[in-house]
Image (cartoon, rainbow, N blue to C red; front, side, top):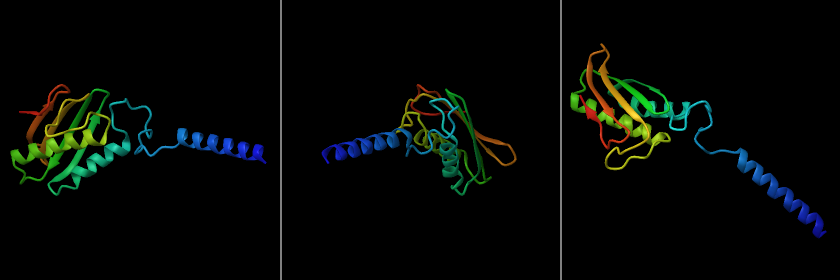
Length: 143
């Protein structure tokens, strides 16, 4: 009887170990294995975009990324001021950093592993602001 219990316990441990190795809870991090280690997967990207489009002033949010760069573009309503456009652009960088594998933000956006280019424009394609957040910079430089 002890042998049967030992065999059953061993089988249970093996099954749990196999399930742990294969299972996930990683927010879809393996959804697109061809993306680099610093890139958001499709689930993370769509959630980051949704977080911004939930803002009533943002009509559209898009991003393109490589292993070391991310280009973020927001289309906003005409009533958005330059200052508010900068706030929305900063929020987009923070959301992307929080949703993905880049270093997390604090009071400042902070250094990271990715260079960000942020463009905020109106629906008629008029640029409101453009910013660059270099990976070794703590903040966005707005133009």
